Every structure is written in C-alpha cells, then in structure tokens.
Length: 167
Image: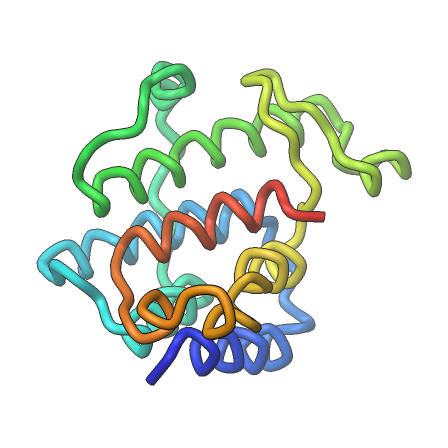
C-alpha cells in the first residue's frame, strides 16, 4: 500500500461518513482515544493509518483537559507518536476556544480563522479536514518516491497539521 492508496481510502471514508454531524473537536478527541490503542505500533503502515482515522468515527472521545492549553507554546517533541498526541491536543484546544466564541458559525469562517493560540484554521468539519489533510498525498510519488512507499507517525502528524491549515 502506498501514500496514494491511503489518500483513496481516506476519500472513501469521507464519503461513507458524509452525513456525520460530529464536531471536529469531538472527532479529534476520539482520535486521541484511538491513539492509545495504537501506541505500541512503532511505525504504522498506511493501512494502519487509514484504520486510525476510521476508528475515530466510532471510538468514544477522551474528556477535554484544560491543562492542554499549556501545550500551545511547547516546541515539537522528538517522538513522532508523542508529537501526534501533542498536535491533537493543541488542535482540540484551538477548536474548543473557536467553538466557544461562536466564530466557527460565522460566514467569514470560510476564509479562515485565527485561533487564540495564533494558529490559522481553514477546515472545521471532519470531511474537509481529512480531505485537505491528505491532499498532498495525491501526487507524492512525483515529488518523493521514498515517502510514497514509507509511512509512520510523522505522516499522521503531517495529515493533522495540513487538515487544519490547508485551504
């Protein structure tokens, strides 16, 4: 399985759950819960990564922890898995704050919103978040053949960050 195959599986997942009304912040809390069962996988395959994102639709979300706010200005950590956890927690904080302010519901949110952490957000539903997060995989073999064939937690982290920031 390659990165392009992962992209296709994610697009199929988006289609299968297109009627899902779960807020993105809740889905990300579910992914954080899923991450605990994936912790032992040192280098997840692309198929396991697809399973990770799929499980987020059915896993119960972890409770929001106010202390996650402290992670906003923390520098990235060395462990790719722990970095995925950090990214998820910071994104959850951003979304909870944007939801509380009501700005996500405003028409101008379509053009992006600045979170209190200073990060820019463009995607506020699960479908657009996953679609934009994986868009870079579409032609990855042209730019980086090795990346197209290998996977890992850094791939998950990149999908999460691009899901937030890519228009």
